[in-house]
Image (cartoon, rainbow, N blue to C red; front, side):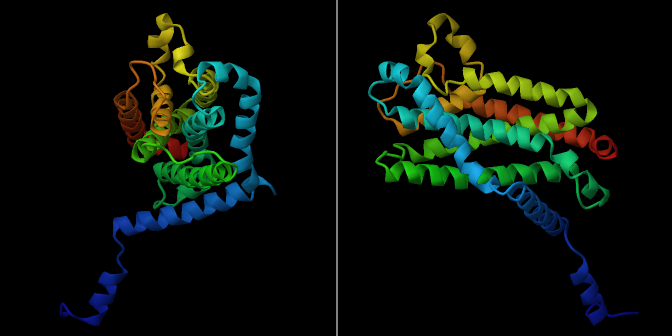
Length: 273
């Protein structure tokens, strides 16, 4: 009989990895793989992370600058549009990127340590990391040319950005499963998120919407996050009644719970699809 402190037993116990350590190792490997694939897709992939929002901001400033000057004369137009582009872009890009995470990593799902939900969550984390880098570069650039980029309510702005990211994660979780079970549903997600760009208050304040239609406008959860960011940036900015972070957080809870439930329910089918 071997003693409890037998070196062979101690070595065996140390070689047994906990589920948490296995999960962290899988996430680290997936993150490195996703980062390399994302940033080396083209020669200018890393540069496009910064240029994409910049081009949108310049285009919207040129297109809607005169109108915005009359609607919100006491607020900087460039920063107003920047907050909208970044807020909506974070949610949309997160959802659309992680929608295809399972398909892009299907060869890795043959390893029992790698779950389909791991690939989705890692892509969501990578998207958040890349957003932080691109947003910092953008705000530093705006600050260098004279913009007041530090928000009036920093924690409120951070909470709104996190909530918008989580909204994208929730939608992505749902779409990542549905697109495996019903391939056409992935295209539907893109079709829905596309028009939302124009009805999320990115290039105009919600107060420009006729009062009779503002309640319909507020059904869009992204509006609540974007407006919360703006009220945190501009102390003189007043949004329309009904804007609530509670509504956005409720949307986050529902979509994430539903998405995780779908991953648990169809864990086998999405791998064998």
